[in-house]
Image (tube, rainbow, N blue to C red):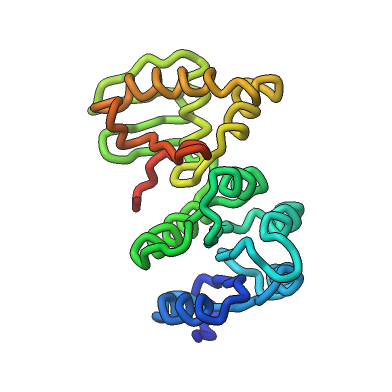
Length: 233
């Protein structure tokens, strides 16, 4: 375990010894400073004391549900939280994302994918949301000028389509749940009308994707929400 204060600090919250060992073996490569908590109350205390740059959180903790841990941390901190859980039901993923988790990986997961998600979350956490230009592959969104181009050609979006794309851009690489998007773009009265979101996502994909039936930029997290491609995904 590294003690270098200049390294990104990762707080691992899991009560299973085997998972703790696996994560420490996987991540203790000199890239991170690792910290451990075995239950929810210890996690909340460590989130204050260790000032982590990222939290890896299991939902099945012995003293409180991981979703409650997320909610309490979100009352005062925007530290990136990646859920690592054996729970793979859509409802569990939605609850965690709605509570404020940045990402969700179901156990078992691949080491390469875990590290990619960590890199993406850490990179996003140091970026300013107000950065004027988002560019990945052949898609470019200039937020200051409200201009969207694909392969160098300007794309005309409706106001709603632009607001939807802007929301995805400012959370690039992060899963945003259906309910979060509906609340942000259309208001709380539309939370129970997911078809409105599906139609607009479909229209947006037709305008920015090479093949809307096989989207490369806006990907679907089944039953949970959508994710806009980040630079290192």
